[in-house]
Length: 456
Ligand code: UDX
Image (tube, rainbow, N blue to C red; front, side, top):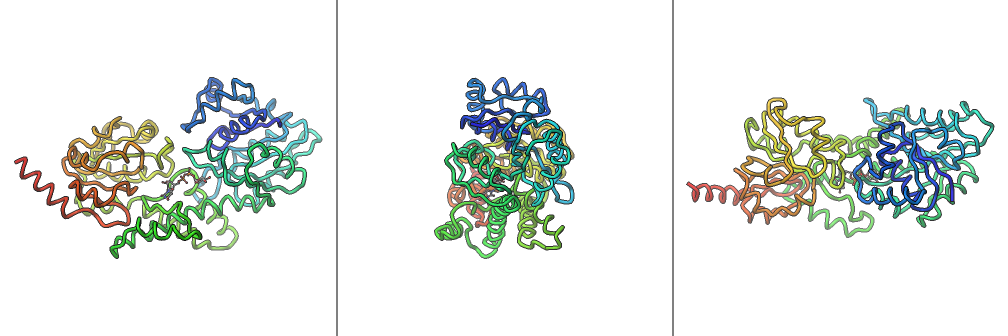
């Protein structure tokens, strides 16, 4: 078993550290935030991630994982140091590498034995060559330090499972020593290892993520066309999925992709291409389609309603996907300001994301409209004039179609996640607009008129 240090305790770093400990390695996670370190020592995860706290507590009690702000002691005798710090997107689409540079310098100043530095953070192709040079330049002791690339493919919400049961592990190395060491570190995972050179490994990460982003944008593009020609995107996706060359995953049309990876990695690769004098047309198209898709439902609803001013608008789901409290690049972040700007009174429900969202849009009067966070869906729907579904949380998916008709003032639903069958909404008397499918309109309007008549 190896002595491993992990720099950065975000999604990538913390999950990797905990999983290495689970496999029996001796792990020290380093973070600059003292408060966060104390929190982790007490068994509390700073991120919302299923199964993570259990593993943190178990491995901490067993003495296999520790947390510290003292990078020097963590790095000095480590066999391998994994870097999992952020590489945030800059305004021009390039990746900000300053956190990586800081860690690289700390490593150079701390290591006292031969060690392998493994970059897990997503970095532009060629960065790891520079990181290695940078470390050599600042190295204090006469020891061997090499850099390897080991990109991460975990998805938020299933990060622990994705790490322990990954489909493949990509290692990019430039020497047999580095390749052998990294292979041995990963041996206990029993996962196929793809060993390539450093630049290919860096590229595999972008190429994989951008391919998935492209797949989603392609389905969203086709979905929009389906609406125009009277086809149904879910039937189309089903028909496509039987072809093994296409596969059945990531064919769900919706309100666009969000999160910390796809939006950032598409822009980063497009930037890398531009820097190299090449236009990456496919990825550029994926980015453009995604931008349009985010406000597709808002635009549809704006045409239908004339104004949102003074309307009660139920917003179901704020996070970029279920199973996480992460709001990065979520559709809600684009749509809520538009609705507030139009004077809507929003009642927002999200089982875990509301607190983070309230930091950006505090409760109360907000722009021309207002926003209120509610902990039960019924409260959001009661007397609402219109409802938007932005995240397919289980709580939303299990809501019966009748509930919308019974609770809302006007049963008018815009669903960005195609949660319901059009027919069931039609039968329930709900006016229902979704992505790439026909709307449920006529009967719904008729029905709601009948209800109004019965009530009058
Ligand atoms: C993704 C990749 O899955 C992971 O391998 C990579 O390392 C990091 O980026 P993540 O961002 O956590 O993970 O979420 P993911 O489940 O892939 O979803 C990303 C976005 O695409 C979400 O907004 C999701 O709603 C959307 N999506 C996904 C669709 O719109 N349709 C789909 O069919 C699948």
